Image: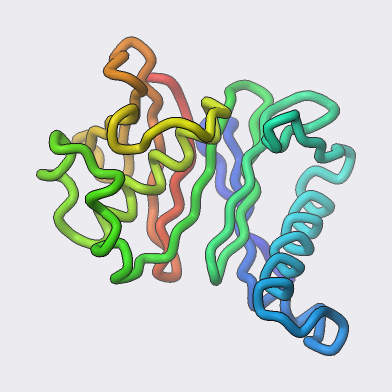
Length: 194
């Protein structure tokens, strides 16, 4: 089984396909419910990525459920229907989000896209990117009560692979996210401060 590794200036990302994990665990060895099966595969995928890329590290969670490395450093986890991702850095706090591009984003985009973001949120892909950036930002801030539409703003940089997010109109704390598309998924990872 193979995982793909990316390096963004000492922020690392490992991705593995859910289908690769599923091969290791035939249906008969886990629960029959779809939701339980999905959660099982996600957990096994994270275990695989940790063992392969961070074998001497232990995954622990803070009181809010945010993962980090016991030995020090920052960690973020995300998954979609088809991909599982693990990101880590020993230098900066990071957030990772992976979302499949889907028509359902058109039904919910008004709940998270601010009026100032509408001109950069035309296509399903752009709407999904904005969702991913905001979701990754919430992971960095470790605050699940943030209102995506009111408290977070996203700006598209001139480089189409970089987007910026800031909270509560505080332009002095802008976070830069690297964004790319793979296997009909948007992958968004925080790579540096602006």
